[in-house]
Length: 255
Length: 232
Image (cartoon, rainbow over all chains, first blue to last red; front, side):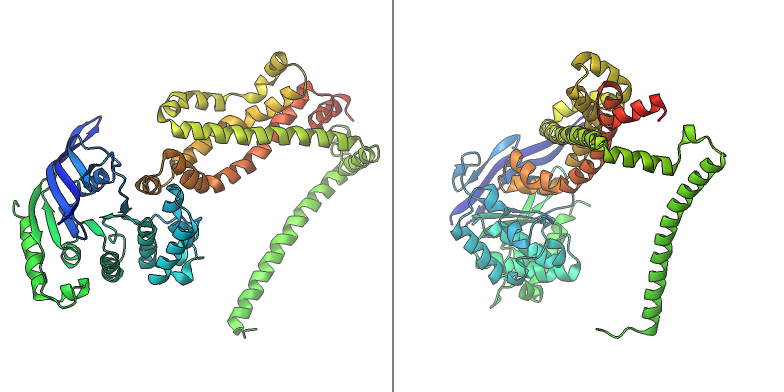
C-alpha cells in the first residue's frame, strides 16, 4: 500500500504564562492512499492539534511528518482541511465561497471555475450558486464547505469534527452524504471526532487516543461484510454494535 | 391582490394611524418651538438683541443669500471638512491595518492612542496655529485631530473581533496574513468602516469650525465668531 501520510514520534506542548500543557506524546501512524481513518479520543485530548500539525499551521516540538515521502515543509501536496464550522462568508455567494481557496492559491482559471460549477451540480447545490450562506440549511452549508475543499483537488482530507455543529438528524444524513462523496472522489481522509458511531460508520480504521497528553492507545481496523458498504448500511449491521462496544471499552478502560 | 381578513385590516389601520401621529407630532413640536420663540421675542419676554428671533435669522440668511456671501462661507467649510474627512479615513484605515499586522506594535502604542484620543483637541487648536501658521492647513489638521484617534481605536477594535475560525480557514487554504486581511478582515469590517465614516464626518465638521474660530478669514466658524463679536 502506498503511504500518503506518515507521522513519527510527534510531540507537542502548549505554552502559556501559567505553565505548559503537554498535548501530544509520541504519536506515530500512517495513512494509506484512498484510506479513511478516524481518530477518536476524549474531548480536549489534543485531536484537533494533530490536524493543525499535519496541515502545517503549527510545528511539532519533536518528531517528523512526511507527506508522499517528503517532509512537510518541502511538500507541495495539497491538503484539504474541513473545519468544525463551515466558515462560509456571508458577504459572498455560495459560488464565490467555493472559489475562495482557488483565489487564495492563485489558481482561478476557466478550467477550475468549470470544475467548481461541476461539483456544485453533482452535489445538488446548482440552484444555490447565487444564494448567500444564510439562505442554506446546515447540511447544505457543510456540503458547500466540502466542495470548497474538494475543488482544490487535495490528496489528503483532514476533517475536524465537521458534523458536530449540526443537529442529530442532519448529522446522520450529512455524515452519510459526505462520507460517500469522499469515497467517490477516492480521497485519503483523516477524521477527528468524539462521536464513536460516526467513526465506526465512516472509517476503514479507528485510532483511539488516550486522555491528555494524548498517546495512541490502540488501532482497530473495521471490516464489514456488506454488499453495499455505506455509512447507513453499516449502522444497521451486526458488526456495528461490536465495534462500537470495543472502542467504547478501550476509551474508558482506565476509569 | 390577496384578500385581507378584517383583523389584518384593523391592524394595518392601527399602524397607519400610529405613523401619522408620530409624523404630525414631530412637525408640530418644531413649529410650536419656532412660534414660541418668535412670539416671546416680539412681546419682550426675552431680549431679541441677545436671543434673536426666527424672523430675524431668516431675514439675515436671505440677505446673505442675495449678496452670495453665505455660499462662500459654506463652500469653504465644506471643502475643509471633506479634505480632513478623507484624510482621517485613509490614515485611520492604514493605521488600523498596521496595528492588526503587528501585535507588538499595537500593544506598544495602545496607551498612547488612548491618551491622544482623550486630549482636549479644541484646547490645542491655538497651539496648532503657532506650529503651522494661520492658514488652511491648520484648519484641516484641527478637523482631523478631533476624529482620527478615536477612529483608529474603533477600527482596530473591530478588526480584532473577526471570527478566528474564518482567519484559520484562510491559513488552512495555505493563504498568507495579507490574504487574511483582504479576504476576511476588510470585508468583515466594511459595515464598521461605513458607520465610522458617519461619525467622523460630524466630528471633522466640529474640528474644522473650531479651527475657523481661530484662524480663518472665511468659513462658517469665522462667521459665527464674527457675528457674535459684532452682535448682529
